[in-house]
Image (spheres, rainbow, N blue to C red):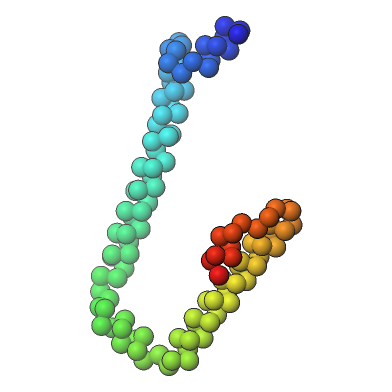
Length: 108
């Protein structure tokens, strides 16, 4: 094998000034999960801050005051929306001529 290619394929070979690219690659690799956790923590803090003044009894009383037909209509429309989205995925898979995965039918 060609010597430069063999050196490039060996992961533990230290080359001059290539440690900078390796450090950047390492920091980018570790930055993604850290950034994800930071955004998740910020989202939880924001939700906690927003709902701090809301009491559970107020929410439950509000839901109990809704007519039953509105709750059933919301559930029905949610199911219809899921069926439409599943059909849209199925149509997209047919367009690219793939077999539809079984999870689409299991989800229904």
